[in-house]
Image (cartoon, rainbow, N blue to C red):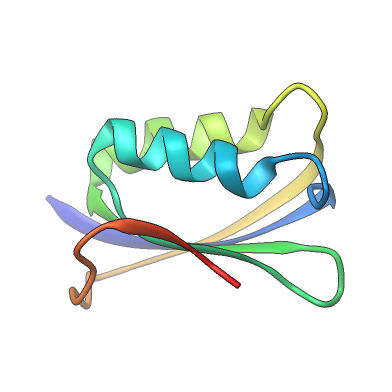
Length: 91
């Protein structure tokens, strides 16, 4: 079943290649969406794909790359809206 996952990730998640990590993992899993840094130091992720795959992706996001420290991942699930062709970093 296709789902949409919107996450906000807090901790040491900026300036540690977190967005690159998220993008690489999402693309390898066939997930579409975006990732971006927020002014408050958090990172926002919008991901659409198979629900089972998104749960695996969420586990990876919770670990992050080696230089990151993920303190909290807040996720909201909904029906997919579509419109994404790839998984991209927003600047």
